[in-house]
Amino acid sequence: MARPCVLLKYGELMLKGRNRGKFEEYLRDALRHAVDGASAPVRISQRPGVVVLSGAPMSELMDRARSVIGVSVVQPAWRTGRSVDDALATVSQALTERFGGPDRVGPRRFAVRAHRRDKTFPLNSERLAARIGSHVVEQWGWPVDLSDPEVEITVEADQREVFVSLHKERGQGGLPVGASGRALVLLSGGYDSPVAAYRAMRRGLRCDFVHFTGAPLTGPSSTYKAYALVRQLDRFQGGSRLHVIPIGNAQRALATAGAGKLQVVAQRRLMVRTADALAREVGAHGLVAGDSLGQVASQTLANMATVEEVTSLPLLRPLVAWDKEEIIAEARRIGTAEISTLPDEDCCSLLTPPRVATRTTPSQFATVERRMELDELVPKLLADIQVHVPGAA
Image (cartoon, rainbow, N blue to C red; front, side, top):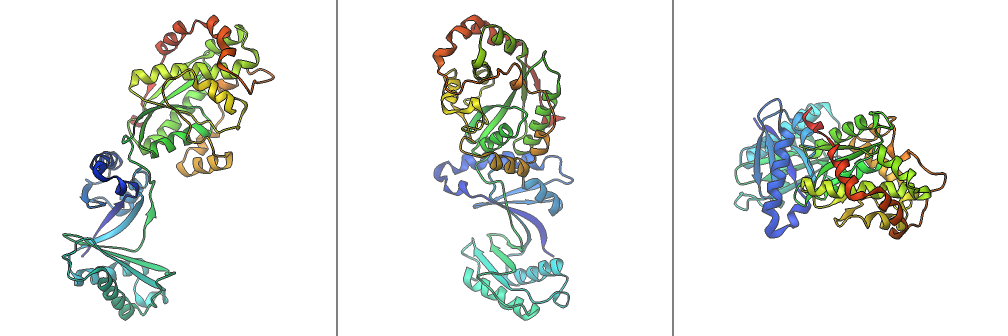
């Protein structure tokens, strides 16, 4: 009898030449995190361009593999002996398990996609596909349709075994988390910044998170929401850390210092300045924000340039050209949308002036920020950090 397994195939990693081994190492780390705590020990086996998961029930392996960034295809399969007869028997087993037998299902247009990864297998890919196809026609009476099949049978001959599959799903894609370094995400409670964090992870960045609350002028609701968002995002990387910084008093001080219509951008500059200092402490080499060009007054091109001026680290904006509908759709797909709709007290809405400046320059903030004594303020803000590890709860 063939044994169930799940095949994981990568897309971009296949293009990585001499560095591919390092990327595969990060992928194995991600897989070990994904299967940690499974109902049975999971074996992770490496093949050229393919990773095989086995040991736990197939449905559980599929659920865990779907969240692994760096995997382009998640494919439930049956593994069997390395012979044509074993392949034929396993195709019959797979079709019977799915459809219940030739007498219980009407004709289905089908195609066979065969791939001989090991060139010592006795039949080449074309002949193997023809042999499997003839078997299905004979046993099941189905017509062949190579261009638009209802059932696609995949048969892959490897060095030690043959894999048979009837189904494949799209994986998360991208590069394995950690392969591109570390970043610190400025996380609010809205739709945008969690999606930006996910998109950064897909480009290989391992992310820590910083959330600014309006405490003591606001309650803890935004912290609870940020915690829930990070816990959801932690499925994609593991080991996430959330740094919570209260800036309510600093926001009030900005207003008292005469920020006026510059208040929103001044708050944003203070957050990025503080995040820059925190990033250096935690070993992050860049910042990630959920800005979308023109979405709100603080996200005009001029204001984004003014905010970016306070950090020497790269300030990445994965969603800069996305519209709101695209962002919300992605939030729904990754599971953060429902959390983002929960009510909270957003620190950015505190002390908002009637009119917000849309075309600022750094020089406009010199007087206000001098009154704030930022060299002393930023260390004070960092001293009040609370650190949470949501994925460990």
